[in-house]
Amino acid sequence: MNTNTKNGDKLIYFVRHAESDANVNPNARSLNPLTENGLQQAQTVAKRFKHIRIEKLIQTSKMRSRQTAEAISTVLNIQAEENDLFIERAGEFEAMFEHRHLPNAELTEAMKKKLNKEHWDYSKQELFEDLLGRVKKAAEYLESVPEERIAVVTHGAFLKVFIAYIMFKDALTEELAVTFMDHIASSNTGITLCK
Image (tube, rainbow, N blue to C red):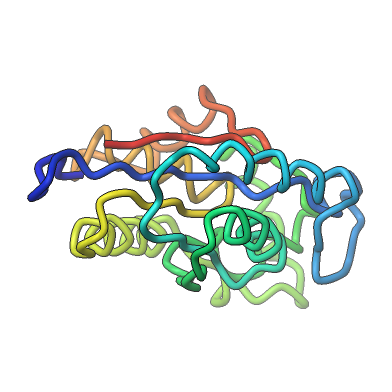
């Protein structure tokens, strides 16, 4: 990301959504709203933003992102913008593994095995190249907006690939992203600051 803007450094605060049903129940089959604990986490992270100047708040269309952003929006008194460039990996990714968080190497193997099942449509899965293209568009979008202090309520896997892209730029390969993701963690309502 370009750190030189008109008035100084552009700061992006990435927030992973609060705890959702699927974070605690791998068999959850719903819209995946926040749990009671997740609602409390959202309030807690919102309070952390009370004394941080945020000019733009972005959420995804996923309920867990919207509910987390709603708490932040209330504290900041700004409307959240919905932008699915920052959404979790698209396709059947979330449902096909009962929401288990597999290391990417295992995920790739599991995806190959799923190809043999008639009910799984591989064409609906976002491939790494597509995800990386979306990450690049998200970075370009953040660089293009005039606001310099932005909070983005996003998702764990997307955030990890985004951070890997910031670090490695066009040298980022799927293999490098897998290695990077195996060595980085993202907690619900964790805040990652990028300049």
